[in-house]
Image (cartoon, rainbow, N blue to C red; front, side):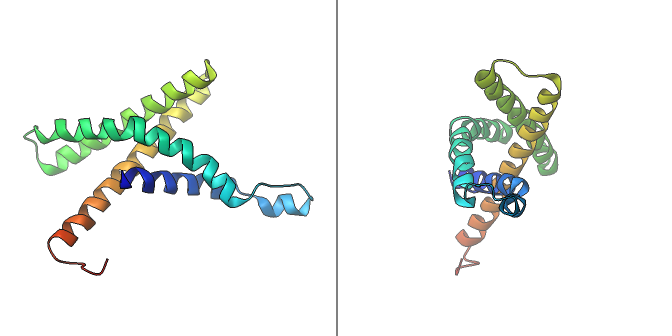
Length: 143
């Protein structure tokens, strides 16, 4: 749950910052929406998608991966591939449901963006697991 919120915030922040050209808009006297409004407009649907699709999918993948007798590195690599594939397919499916048609160029971008979003989610999960493990062992008590 925490990882979905953190990842949604990171993705929303990156998208808003990469598309925020309020300096150019203020020079031409055009109205621009505030940074916070843009952030919330992206954060809410992205969080919904993460909570409804990504979290259950990641729980399924993690439980399934626990049964594999592979080395830790092999499991992490395979998990990353499964997360990327799941994110790409999820974003593509959501886009098809919303727009009912997608061009070939859009399909490529949806696959790439969905994969990057899921990979970001996996990285956030692993970082939070590391922090919580350290707190549980008694280290980093002041976090």
